[in-house]
Image (cartoon, rainbow, N blue to C red):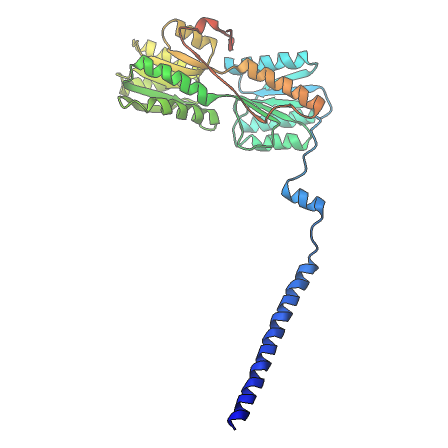
Length: 349
């Protein structure tokens, strides 16, 4: 009986093992079948999945018109870049339409539509917002029209052909060092910020503070946005002076605001207040010569605009610019020591 039980148990164990083996085998077979059912991608498909095929160069809308779209020409900086880009484009054989979006993203979009309707060869743009401009540039791209951005970047790569901007970080830090020296490394100061939608406003402010905040005896007692405007800067400075008549310095995100701040300080009968800006305008140069400003960081507006026009021509003729999309042009710290070499946003060595 015991031998019979052992034999029966052995037969049962063998049967179970066979069943398990069959189950594993059928599972493996099913897996293999499923794998075989999905064909391997072709070499071309694999390459496309790994990295999209290079886009064909945009060839323009068909005309010889270049649109130059900037903020208001009432600001000498934007007027300079529009004039420099226009002159260079015309030298290269293009017809130019220079227009202003007045820092209005909706108006800018309409101007891009106009450029598309005119079958523009290319667009050069100092844009009206890092985020708001992306859609307009994409729209031009879809219409086969390349865009070359100057002065201000957008928050997306691979849409514009070039983004050529001043090295705001380097320039703001350089002039902030001059501000610290003028303040004697101590004292209360105020800051006038640029337009919040403009990436340059944040970059410059951050760079200012990377230098100034190293000095514990320097204290920012007021910070106001003046939106790049001279009149608004004058008004904001008046208000700040009422609350903080003892300030010893003002850092400004651009020269237009710095000139407005200097005028408010003069109207209040105050002097010996250190003021810095960024841009390198002739108006700021006059204030530096008069002792009302410590200095400014020159953004080489004319040079940047000329680069954009040249790269537009190179791209339309050759399908490439020969440059990276994002390009930085260093600023020059302007003080009383070298201000005589500055004129029309051009620094003569």
